Image 1 (cartoon, one colour):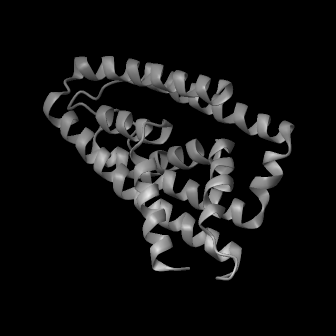
Image 2 (cartoon, rainbow, N blue to C red):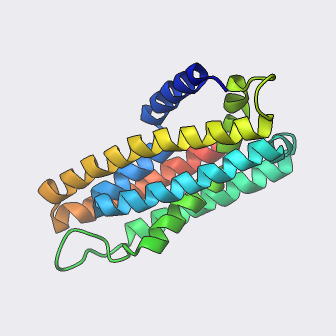
Length: 203
């Protein structure tokens, strides 16, 4: 693969990561509610999920999902159900006495949340299936290798953007969020999760 192709793809990946979407909104709301550390671990989880989707495209699994309405619908509804569960958790989430973070801020639940959030959205795999092959070169490396390289490039670019968003939202959390406002933010995050679930199944 040529360096020029990688540069163009990286620029496109950054612009896509910056565009409003469920992943960046997810990182922002989690960081605003619970601090930058939460957003960082969620970002690691989302990145791991993107590795999964890249592998699916490279192996041809995403094409199978695209041509199987039943499988696509089943995964979509599982993803929506998970988002609704997150909405319920956010709505009833208590506020710690000593600060403005939710109680459940262990790294593993946050990392797992990002992974499940990403891999339970089959539309990400379909997007990768449509987007990544446009930058492959028939006379270059094996297509599966090129897809994985492009997928990892996309992940690195998205990671840089999302980490920046996490720290920006974490800065807001430290300076403007009080326990009372945090309770309101938890309710708003729940509404966002419900909206994301509806978008997943309806759009």
